[in-house]
Image (cartoon, rainbow over all chains, first blue to last red; front, side, top):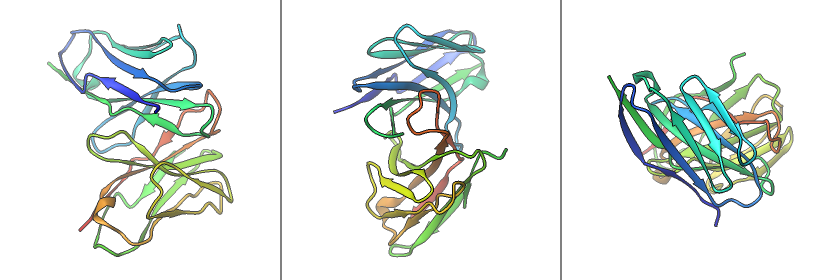
Amino acid sequence: EDQVTQSPEALRLQEGESSSLNCSYTVSGLRGLFWYRQDPGKGPEFLFTLYSAGEEKEKERLKATLTKKESFLHITAPKPEDSATYLCAVRRGSTLGRLYFGRGTQLTVWP
Amino acid sequence: NAGVTQTPKFQVLKTGQSMTLQCAQDMNHEYMSWYRQDPGMGLRLIHYSVGAGITDQGEVPNGYNVSRSTTEDFPLRLLSAAPSQTSVYFCASSYSGTGYNSPLHFGNGTRLTVT
């Protein structure tokens, strides 16, 4: 069965303390891996799409990387405003449009 | 552009009542979908549509109906609400259902409680 697993479930960082979030997947026929940010009471906000192993994308303090089995979201020198739940999702070529989501990592950055 | 707009933001129903959750997008997206989000679980697909007049079931379709008469609108109907349908519902759209460079864009959700 296809699975998307995110770890850790929750992460507390002090402001400026860099770390990484993990998303491992067992989907066959990957057609994109997506990272989203979700703030309380809001819908997921798109961050990145990664298509193939070795690809990297950056946005401000965030960098996403992809291997054949997992993706990492690296957070460099985080700030309190980076606190949110980060969701990982994958798309398969054989299931039209559907994204398979992990349960998310709840990140808290304290001053 | 407003993006994806969902109404209402909050709703309380009694068991057995029916209602329609509204979703509209102004990005001319072909693909639209409904997900539900429950504590401790990933977002799960309820129904989706690849264009006006075309809909199909997702992972958890029971108890829900959809229709797509226009490109912009994709309402979700609860036929006879049950407590198990208490959840947060998200509508999402994308330019294409299969394109690599076609992420889903989400609305801000409808928080539904069934008592």
